[in-house]
Length: 252
Ligand SMILES: [Zn+2]
Image (cartoon, rainbow, N blue to C red):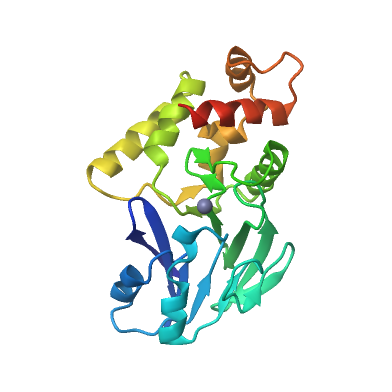
C-alpha cells in the first residue's frame, strides 16, 4: 500500500512524497531542501515531473547530484532520464502507470495515473486544481478544455494530487459561477475548516471535481448561463464557455 504525503514548498506548492516498499519518490520537487528534510536520511529512489515550470523542477539538479536517481517526465525538461509521452505505460514503485498528455497550462504538461490495487492516484501538476484549473500560459482554451475532459473521464474514485494549495480561492470563484450548487457550498465550508487548522485540502477526487469544479461543468445550464452574462455568445460551444470562465477567473 502506497503512502502519499505533501511536502509544502514555497508559498503554496505541494511536492508529493510517495513511499512504498522502502522506496521514496517525489513529484514536482521545485525545491530540494524540504525534500531532504522529509527524507530524514532515507534515499530518494526517483523523481516524477509534470511540466517544465521552475517551481516544479528547481530541486532536480541538487537531488540527482545527491541520489543519482532516475527522473521521469516530459522530454522538454533538462535532466529527464526517462521521457514520458502520451499513452506510455510505465511502472513506478511496482505500480502500473498511464501517461496522458494534457497541454494547456504548458504545452509539455503530462498527467500520470497510478494504479495500486483498486486505488487510482492522479498526479496532474498545474492542469486540474481542486475547484479550478491552471492558467493558460502556453496552450489554447481548446487544448485545456480537452485535457480537463480527459481527466474528468477517469474513474470517479481517482484521487487528485495537484500541486498548489489554491482551493479556497478557486472555490470562491466557483461559488461566483454557481452560487446555488449545494455540494459546492458544502465543499467550501469543509475546505475552509481544513485551512483554519492549517491542513491541506488535497487530495481531491474526480467525483468531487465533477460536481463542484466549474471548469469541468461547461455543459451545465447554470454554468452556461453565468458565462453568457460574462460575454459568451448565445451560440457558444463548450470551449467558448470554458474560455470565458478562464478569462473571468484571470481577473477575479
Ligand atoms: Zn506551472
